[in-house]
Amino acid sequence: MAFPDIQSFMRLLEDRGELLRVSVPVSHDLEITEIADRLVKKGGPALLFENVRGSDFPVAIGLMGTRERTALALGVDDLDDLAAKVRALIDLKGGGGKLGLLGNVTKLRDAMNLPPRRVRTGPVQEVVWRGDEVDLSRLPILKCWPLDGGPFVTLPLVITRDPETGERNMGMYRMQVMGKNTTGMHWQRHKTGTRHLEKAKRLGQRLEVAVAIGGDPALIYAATAPLPPIPGLDEFALAGYLRGQRYPVTKGITVDLDVPANAEFILEGYVDPAEDWVTEGPFGDHTGFYTLPDLYPLFHVTAVTMRRSPVYPATIVGRPPMEDAYLIEASERLFLPAAQLILPEIVDYHMPPAGVAHNLVFVGIQKGYPGQAYKVANGLFGLGQMMFAKVIVVVDENVPVNDFDAVWREVAVRAVPGRDTLTTRGPTDVLDHSSRGWGYGGKLIIDATTKKPEETGGAESSRDLQLDDPAHEEMFRPYASAELPNFEGVVAQRQTDDGYWLVALHKTRPGQAHELAQAFAAHPAAEGIRHLLICDEHTDVQNIQDVWWTVLNNVDPERDVVQFGALLAWDGARKLPEEGFVRPWPPKIEMDAAVADRVDALWPVYGLPERWR
Image (cartoon, rainbow, N blue to C red; front, side):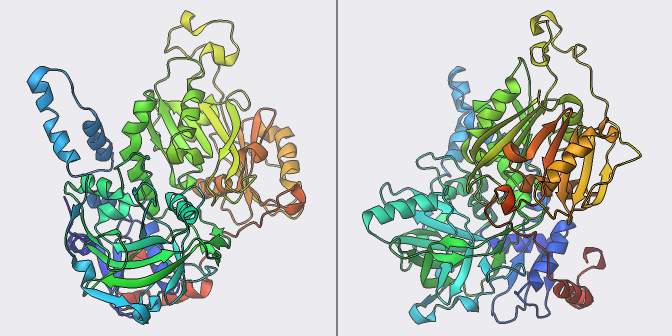
């Protein structure tokens, strides 16, 4: 199903009871975030704030805030259908005579929807601000979290063109408002926008930029998708394929760029590579931690175009689960067939919300020979944005990779620390605050598959055994101890029945976490435990998702995941300068208590159901 624009999608959601209106005045400074965050974490409906203080435009948020709404936005009944759709497209048949070739007709028709469709103008150019009329403060741009450096455009579709090849790119890069007509442009070092700017600098020219806000849901998703660098395949093409119709584009008013004709707003302008970069941030990021201030290019807005009655769509990111988890899952499903073309033994894979995309990947494989888990993991490290993955866990094909607890149970019983774990190095997301260097750090592979005798040091060969007979390996039987030791700074701890020891530590000195791990590993309480997870004192050890989210954010596996005998210790506590960590350590995102209290008091006034409070 193709939606003409975001407002048509909103009307469908409202008809289905999946969108609620808030008509009383609200602030785009923290208040909208606090309301929306509660609903998305409870699987609640999307929201339309009709009366935003200081702006004439309403704010829509959480439009793809559930798995079901994301599937609806992308025109499928279930996100798993995306993989089947792509698999059908790439499975072109060359045999079978005329009847075999006729089977390709539907696929070729789908491929014809890839190129965008040029139109003379569109609804997004019904109103135009130029020159001094441009004033970004008139838009309801959100300040999401208390320590944010200012308001940020959180759902921008940033369009640029390669100055040399003419290839187009659209990406979603946050934009901090710096003035009435300027924003930061958060082009990280690995992003295509950065390469376009570097080329413009070599050529001594400005880089034209157009930023769409809105469009239909397929385009918003496409801007987040990790597309492979295939000439002619861009985000407009992906959106056209998903919606089953060529995407309508029109020329910008002041820039020579194609823009989505069905967007709500377009910000047109340029980035001058000769200008000094500006300090951007902090920003409460999708990792659940603040990204600290850094230098980024400045975007100059020369014109703003819009519909006559536009809606400002936004999202928030922060502690998982958030709306972006469902966009990440859509990309998982969409690119599974491509991964299987390169690594055919992959049955499925999943990036759980606790891993905030890059920190954790579960992979199920059909295993046929020793070492295959490492072959697959290393292959994934070489695939596009999967290069940023920090921890890859490989399991047997019968283990459901979307069952978080089941995978970690499999790790405890099948992966022997040291024997079945392997650290390596590579690129990391620049938002990773714990890596050994900016954009560079350690990685960990955990092989939790059923082992072949060659992998356990056995004398036999796997050729001498039945392939489905794991009897040559004695399984680890995890259990929790009733008596747990104490240690300096431990504020809470517990053991699970499936082999994990969870510890919240108030760290006050260098080496404290390492000493704790050493002492706990030597204690009898460690006998039924495989993994010791050390967190900061702000972590709830009763919540395994909170524990893993903290640990995965706070470790560089090469430095912080250490084997002590039969125990693997994960040091997810804060790192100190005295320990050789010279970068600032960012805080976790927390809403201001006064804002949360005010939202609590006003909940009946908003007219929202009590169950979403």
